[in-house]
Image (cartoon, rainbow, N blue to C red; front, side, top):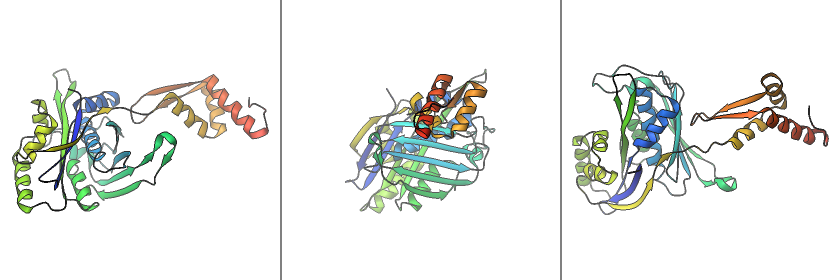
Length: 311
């Protein structure tokens, strides 16, 4: 089954519940960026968190989570849109540490201290229209990513939230590895939630297996949420497929070249005979040839002095 997430409510619409299986999405991100096992887990958790948060509020086109941290990974950025597309990267994909005292990947260690920034953007990007983005931030309090997102939601948005995110990395004797399970859930208490319900949810979450264990056993998001919600029935509001997908393109790369100083474009042409653009989000490489650079110079020259091309 393709990666997908669900958005549901429970307990007479006093609890919002979201869950996602993102194994393929995270695996593709790790492949593209050639991340270490620990960096793969950190990036995968952040991508899943962004996907879950992208469904929480209406009129939001995309959500970006940015960890600006002082650990060896140096930083993580993940973006998800309203259509289930996610992309992201880490500043140091080779960052890795020995397993922690619990025998788990040391995501906390590779992040270290720093800040979590959340950007919510809305608008009609296809038409070039957008609203002023909403920005919030909190200190990194855990480094485990799920706890930091929960802290942000509780502190900055004043919504009592529980978040669980996981990435299971299967190592092989030859030193390679596979992302064998990834996903998570996010539960929020809405106005009118009964304290008894809250206690039951807290107890269920604390006693349930790791979310990656459930995903590896084949449990879908609905079943994971029922476990977290103490067996409650769900009213599913939305279901969408998720995937790793970047919106970069050759045309966007050319537009970036067009935006820099003409002297730099001329230097690219004369010294290198072209340019190479690499997308941070997906590691795609775009080769900008000499003729394209000359066309950019010609257009700039015509705009500058009434029609004479630049040579």
